[in-house]
Image (tube, rainbow, N blue to C red; front, side, top):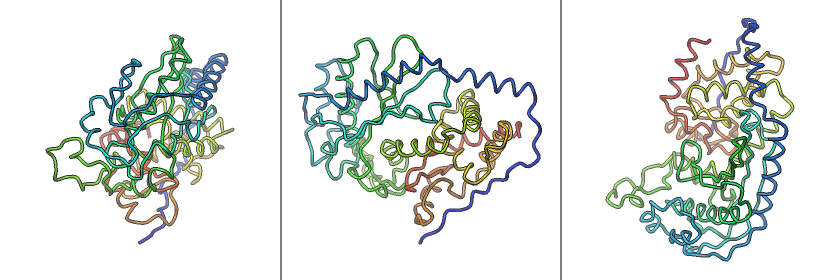
Length: 381
């Protein structure tokens, strides 16, 4: 069965209280605080370009079996899966050797809207597409893909430490403290900014995106815990979404960046919304989700560039507070299969799909976080 995705049932406030002078001043103060100094921006943009070039041209003679996690210790590097060595040993692949190859693509997202809404701590993002030669046909099963991804990150870490001795380069957990899919962080002692390097396979080489639907199993519990043998066919929606994020994130960032470019007024409101969630320790409502949500509300005229900042915030917060958890929002195709949408709704309290319909950008938002946000919004709206 197929269905068109539902209309986004969000009521736009037509009667809005005027923005108070105090609130206007607070908005202006927040706007000034979030902009990094021009020299800081120039510094980290220049470094990101150099780091990207280093990754494109890096050479390495190091090779090992992908199950050999200790081979990096001679370089002073600990493989991120060191404590999961037994689980890695139980994995399989038709390509058993790891060796460095040039990345398929290295993208620097210097004008990404999701970074421009941040604080004066300036972040540059680099997305590295892993070489296709790294993977076999079924490497999406269990921990094979994240293990090989981490091997490549170790190789990148080695190359960058040799090239940038004045900078600290280390592994950093991914979104939601994700230790299975970390990123590399390049920073220094000034605390003015950093470069975050993301790694992912190309969309075509690992598997079709449909392979990562929420109702499919890609991580067998017995691969990690051998004594658990009766749950291997259970779906792994969270793990599937984490894989898809590494593959599809660059495309969605470029989409929202293009939509929000030259809309400074809306980006200011987006930045205030992001600040609201950060100050209340709700990292699940991350910058990318909020940027996508703003774009969707723009498309449905819930948010418009003619609105003042306070009106935008009220409409955005109202849309979240009144989220219909029985439907899916997002950029998914009109003819996305109904069982795929149903699987998302059954697996996650909030569903906001990317253009493929398989990655739920809001997958990390828990029901408790949604309820807490709705409670806090009740006193604001």
